[in-house]
Length: 142
Image 1 (cartoon, rainbow, N blue to C red):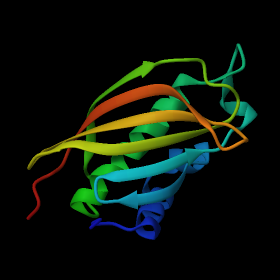
Image 2 (cartoon, rainbow, N blue to C red; image 1 turned 90 degrees about the vertical axis):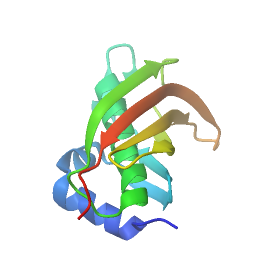
Image 3 (cartoon, rainbow, N blue to C red; image 1 turned 90 degrees about the horizontal axis):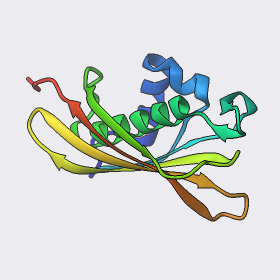
């Protein structure tokens, strides 16, 4: 069972993480150890060559990992990224980007997660465009 719900996580993003709103990131699903987020396509997220910018995709992946972590530990806003590694697999076209994240390992102080980033086509299909792994540090719970 998830320790945080969709509404509560969205409220945290609205109040504490303004970059999520700047990028239009929306949380579509959150379950224990799993999250699905969407960054809608906008022309200002593209870079030369007509592709979605890497920094925008990295931000989306980091927010998805944050959702995964909070789904496990609850509302612990001081959980922070300690490592993020991204492999860009193919040039994403100008479509929404989906981030599907899940936990790989949950320890007492560290959570390791994986996020797959997909280009969401208009016909409902999706293409894997990047693979992300990361580690979050979780402060000791009282």
